[in-house]
Image (tube, rainbow over all chains, first blue to last red):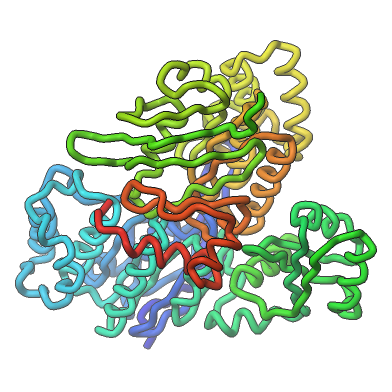
Length: 309
Length: 247
């Protein structure tokens, strides 16, 4: 049985006089012990989806279950089984690190000692500051404390809403390593992120945009679905190269990626030689063109454009 | 101006109590340059940026921004720069037009200039159909593009961008960078922080702060060479891992 089953969930909000569709018939399943990522930019519906699954928000239509329990009918049971770390820091600022943790443990009728093994790795990093008030912690430490509090009742499913947003590259890497260790202990993890590159850290991902799921698969599989040849191109003057590509009729899309542009041509006949000779004609110097395989951001943008058409 | 460097910092330092937030940083930024200002959380980026914007007085060191002294001429500095951040950029309960007009007024543009700029920006950003909508109804990416345009509405010498693209979808994030290139071509210096390492590659030069000091400063190409790395992400991890102090 899947740990999480989401079936045609939809949710609309009223904003002034108009309606905004936050979730549009979203469906997916997460297996037990899976690390499942929801990848999408701000406003794609990730938080609404998590609030529905954590029984904090009622969907307009559709059904969902966690560990076989219905999110509406069985919300009380689900709340005991779920660990949830919201996007915004939601612990008590005026309680110390230790007080916050024992508060959450007490609410779930347990104690820090009982489930210490589960949080040990993470808690040890903030234990030297256990008498400090949570409001006085740095961003990285707050995040670790929040994760401990979400885990203290030994949930079977952990839902993390953008835990790495605004966090620097080093701390992001450490956070994903922590998640891998939790996964190894059998916890099902549902995590959202706006950083496309983090998709590769998940077993499977759902790419989300405008309340809809664009694709669900293993990260590598999603990239294999990128059907057209993809070219990495660079030249001496990058900004004029971009402008040239934007004007060139034969180009389907051109996006910057680090030091290269990733270019898709309308026709497969326009290969590396055709691109090179066109750019030579346009007086570009130090031209480099080579074929590459798509990464998750290439795939996301291709799917985004497809859904706009 | 004889000197084409719009930012010159020499030993710039900020101390809070016995904590050295920014520790003798020295660097120069040329006119029209896109300068990436990277560092882990807590490395001192925000403090350094607040000093350069004239919002926080340095403890010691010397600096000029747009030709003005950081100790004496902070009011002139504020008039010569633009600023936008991820957290706050526009008034949500004003319309797009009203925001442009409001900022135009704040930056001291004439009525005529404001009118011209408003028309130009609305067209340039393809917002004709939304110009009378409240900013809060816009998708984040559009907001950020508008916020950037508003931050340079007075053609400042320098614009400071504090994580302008966080959470923005990948297509709009790239459109945002096209606006940056465009501003840089017009001679506006762009000073930008980001957590996206691919964006570090789009900068002319990048500095990386560790524990209050600038540990590396060069073009992305040279940094990758120096640190024997394939990507800026690798360069960043190599340097930032050395940090001793927490956030």
